Length: 124
Image 1 (tube, rainbow, N blue to C red):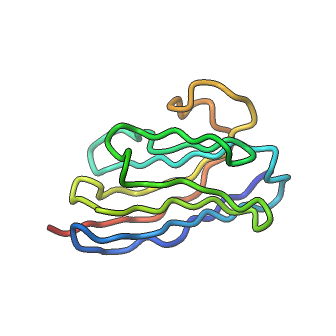
Image 2: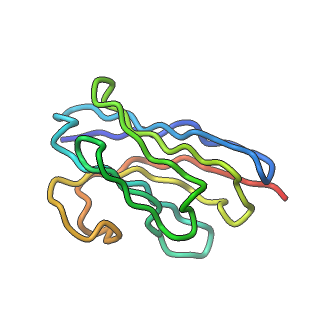
């Protein structure tokens, strides 16, 4: 059973930056493809970013492309989400998730494990 714990959320002004971290335990980290999702108040959870097991390939939602960067440190069992040029519409609870099998990266149903989430609030 993999446990995922996010950290790094907070309150930031528009145009600012935050780096989220997601520490994994209880499993072999390199077995898992990792994703970040977010859920804004009153909205459905949406895909943000994805990284394959060796970190060599990444995918992003169009809304964050060029502003967010996903990375992973397999030696530390941690995945990161660097968020730059933040906008008020980025305000949401951000979740990291782990999946065993490849497939459509935006489908949250295909992820096996989820963290508890970390709040990101961007003020205008």
